[in-house]
Image (cartoon, rainbow, N blue to C red; front, side):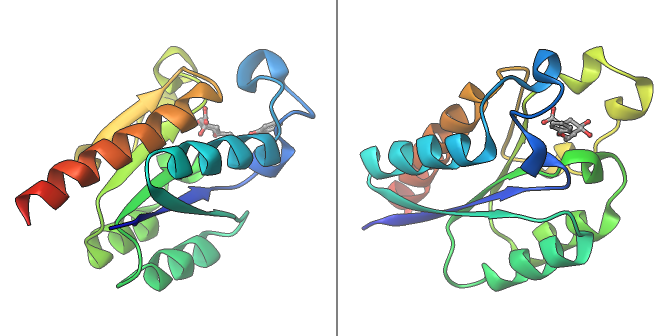
Length: 151
Ligand SMILES: O=C(O)[C@]1(O)C[C@H](CCCOc2ccccc2)[C@@H](O)[C@H](O)C1
């Protein structure tokens, strides 16, 4: 049974590859989505990629995942550190999610050390750059396989 994964990227991640490569690397968001899609396919899953700079649009997209998505991989960007709304949306749809960051926020400014999602995430991947996305997709597929074997 093909499993479906939703990849969500938050604000400013559309700028990847253009600025701050020393923090976020050189890969563009398109590069990342292409690699994540290929990784999902290799593991028998499908992947839909979404990016928005707007909190409400991310909340709406999470709601749209109800009934058609088995796992979410989310890099919330700066909303990681501020958004109760995105937390509530993820909890509300009851879909397992992986929190992902290109950098390791714990080595950066103190305000980045707080996440409104981490305590509810199936896993947290950070500091691996673009590789973190393919790692997250692999874990989602493995996690789903575990879920599938229990059903
Ligand atoms: O490390 C990550 O993936 C972050 O989620 C990225 C967010 C920032 C995304 C902005 O990305 C840019 C990429 C290129 C140029 C400017 C911003 C940051 O606010 C989080 O603390 C950690």
